[in-house]
Length: 448
Image 1 (tube, rainbow, N blue to C red):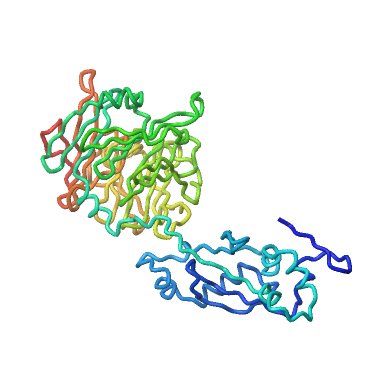
Image 2 (cartoon, rainbow, N blue to C red):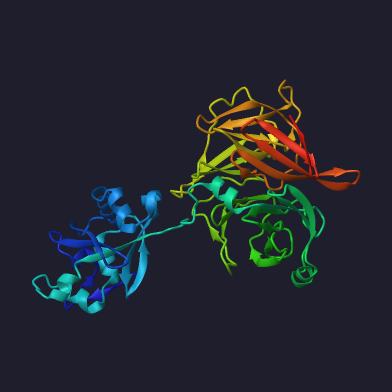
């Protein structure tokens, strides 16, 4: 809000005529508990961007890491800066605003009128030439596991897959290696008026729960989608919210310890994040938008740091990546060897294969390529896409991320049509022996 005050001569007071150009302001940086971190004097015409950049240069990351007690994942991008206005903290951005304009904005009329008289020695006036800046370390994703695969191995033994067009789901127990078909609880069906799972709905597994995000296009009359959880241990269903944004052709991935990322969808560039905690009915948004919409992207989290999204639904093949530790913008990965490869594998599942990401299943569009029967493989350290030795087989994955069940062993559940009815299939990738296995129901047969 712009202030305009008159002094005794009738002149409007503004940042330009209140502060003497030879004077300096004392800028003090505090944490939220009022512990002084750093202070220095700056010209009133110094920008807030310049002040914060100077603070960062003079305070090494190791020092700030100890002050904010963040552990090894400290990153300066997560620091937020605030001023106190009317005893309320108000966030300030690193921009070209001057110190004088900020002080002018937060002072009351009497103090500003006093500042107009240069010879005043009032302590109150002197204090109003200073500025306190408070710093918060925003733990945006403070529940990121230091070892994602190990966490899932330790805390997730039940894996579910909704059955197409039915109020049922398949349940796999990795300890007993059994696969069962479970009916939705009738009480929950009536209570929430549950719909059968559709092929355009999205789901993912997370810590013995199944999360389902119903799909709905912009042309549907309803204003939002429903987000549902199923407790795989007791078959209890919970309608988390019926007010999630409309999505169709999106994908979901569980990021331990307690996040579900919802990425992609027709005309959807914002990424939704659901934090798994009791009574949470809301979602947040990732601070950066996708550069373009993604249709059914294949998602995978690599090296406990990078979230990759692969999409090949239309004319171009896309690879996007974000760093969840630093909360980075989406990086559009450019392949180093794209020219000779017709990338014709679409809507595939993804699994880590040592230092690469293997594409399994999906659709293979016909081409003149002699290696049409081989899957693709992305080497993320060199950004190269190559043809794998693995033979392509058509599997249709709604959840495109393979789930670790042992060290270097991953699983995903598939459903295929057999004699006009759907049958389950268990797909297991063993990264140690490079084998992919599939089964009809409980019987595992070597696939390669």
